[in-house]
Image 1 (cartoon, rainbow, N blue to C red):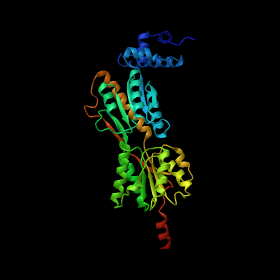
Image 2 (cartoon, helix red, strand yellow):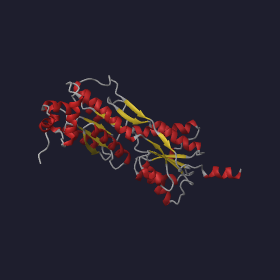
Image 3 (spheres, rainbow, N blue to C red):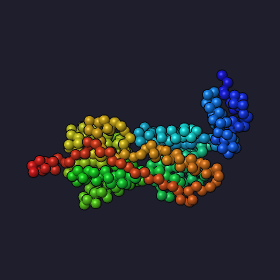
Length: 355
């Protein structure tokens, strides 16, 4: 079956193929094409199932209408939700996405960038796996539009979209303190990344604000995955004194910690309370004890990252500095979703009962 063409639309509508092309390329207003003609062409194209040849269009405009997206771990619900938001925004704008997974390997991340640049993508959105920005600086210097999400690099001259990790962690820790907890441990993620550093600082500052000692043995962990949560919880359970509450730096960490608690016959949350960071896994709400979480705006992170990239792509054609030498940093607020995973420590409950 022959694919519908511009000539077919022109024949049906009675206008020239040039007019059809201008309408479908969004240039009707520039060429003063009437609203009636514009609507007729668009409706006809839809009715006959016309699909534009993006490859040919890209060659004419020197654009591929494709962007590259690099995630550190596609199986992590937090990253996959951001990817979905980016893809939805791209589809609505007539762009396709080439998605790659760096698997928390910087060499793979660098290889992915090289591969995507060789495919002549119009721009890149990268969620870096670590905190080394040297290869990202090279991308910026090459002139390829680049947007970073979920990490912050102060020396990187490109737009970046992040959550307010510091305030989210501060609020999470203070919520535990407000429920009479003093021995609060944190299970952190990948160390020396901006995300982890900001959450750790928020935890420490909240403890210090309330004049609570930050025990070095209560800060454990080195990854955002479930295995780290499990192993770290085992370590914390051997501490004396044991923590009465846990601040997990991700939901995956929280799930791993819960497994360790069950194996040690700990009653959750009566023996130990917990708050986690992220609200991207609906299953946390449906556990026997739903977990209190710090929610990030994953959809907004993806949508804003794509919007910033489109600003760069469009201005790259005109060779202008859209951000006037100051890259745009967007910091999105977080919100605590309070559930049943936080109770007062047993010792305080016993005292209040006696009184």
